[in-house]
Image 1 (cartoon, rainbow, N blue to C red):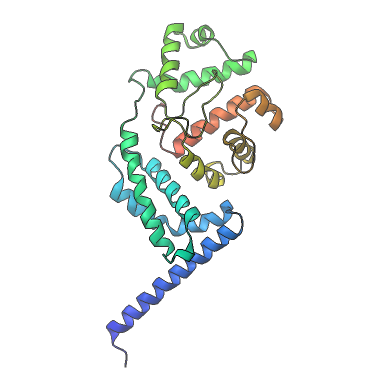
Image 2: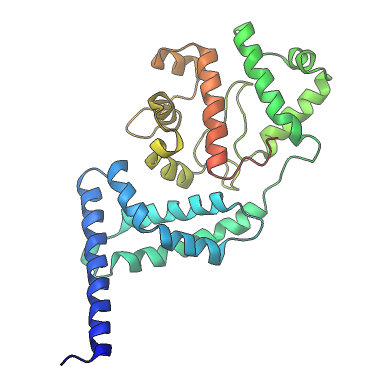
Length: 269
């Protein structure tokens, strides 16, 4: 007759082996089929408890939970990409060795400069006014036109605009209707970094559900999914069969949604 304690440990070991097999099967399917997002989702789902535990254990108090979770997911995907079963280590062992890199995000985030209090409340209004005037005028508005629209001085508009360029995690550059979407443009953490783009491109259906045009805009903007990178609004408009104002609005929407998803939207009202 089998000892109950022995039976318990045998069952536990069997469950552990079954999990390892399931992990490898899911990983192999993802790897063998071009690392498609639909095959990545089951892997990410499997590791949700691990990610949740790491968030609780490692996240600094001042870091948004969604941002730290996204950072962990980035390293999780990188672990999946670099895993080599021929080296003998289990997939979960490889993942556990990679995830501590996410701790660096705590220091990087805490060192960011933020928009001074009093200016932050105007950013959403300024962006909205800029988009409305771009539609109306068919071009980017001047500081004076923005000031008239908002009932403030041009100098005040310039101060807020400079703050956005300097301090917002994903700001505007190259023109009033052009976001700085360049991956890794600022290694201090103020741009969308390569890792964040790597996470986002795999979960676009989750970030922008039922919005294929936003998926296409993302791919062209960041040069992902086999698409050429196109940063100019006019060129992107021609490529997607849209007007420049339409693309400008879509970029604004995409930037806002990505910031919220990554916990970088603290400057909004």
